[in-house]
Length: 234
Ligand SMILES: Nc1ncnc2c1ncn2[C@@H]1O[C@H](COP(=O)(O)OP(=O)(O)O)[C@@H](O)[C@H]1O
Ligand SMILES: [Mg+2]
Image (tube, rainbow, N blue to C red; front, side):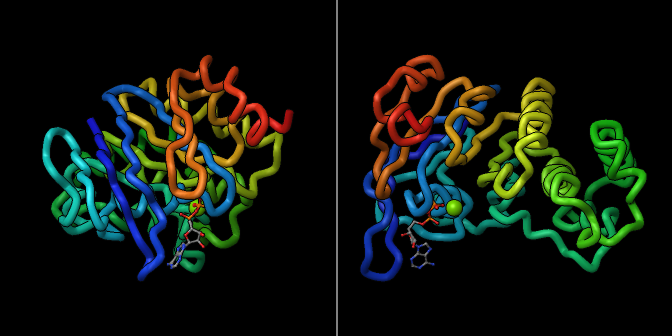
């Protein structure tokens, strides 16, 4: 579904990603592991066309998307749950949900997505007229995912979605991501916490200093020295 091949990206003269290659196949949940500053967000921004790679290719559903505009990439079926959630705190839950959907989206489709989201997260229905800034951390995380879901993505990219959540909420939150996957959305998830991400992922990649240093199926990664030492605190 999504392929990155030998993608290198720089900030000014500083090279950040070094020939990153990764694949996300339809129906999978893939995690991109790495500590702070490893290049996870840079990889995601490159996929979304927010940064243009120096070299390499990004393909989505068989079409090159490197070099095209972010809104066109989103329109092809990629949606993002950004780092730090980026909600509009003064706007209501309902208004936040309507941001980012296409202006030509059919009203009946919109209504059915809204119902779907309120079934998935009943608390958002209760709070639909409340401003987003007054929600708890966990509720804001749900809203951020819901906003991405409103676009009915084929691929949902989540950049450290559990960051800052109370540990007891993280597990429940990951359960929701798993549910979204089961309902047919392909997932690419960045995380610092390998244990949590690998619990729901099929496969993963490990980034260090802008390079992929390990990759494999969940079981292989859980056994790998790199992951155990750097990300599972062993
Ligand atoms: N806009 C930017 N300009 C210059 N350097 C940046 C910029 N954004 C990120 N970086 C640097 O690139 C590196 C990777 O950052 P990032 O992709 O955000 O890592 P991660 O998401 O894994 O924490 C870091 O060293 C960071 O300081
Ligand atoms: Mg980041």
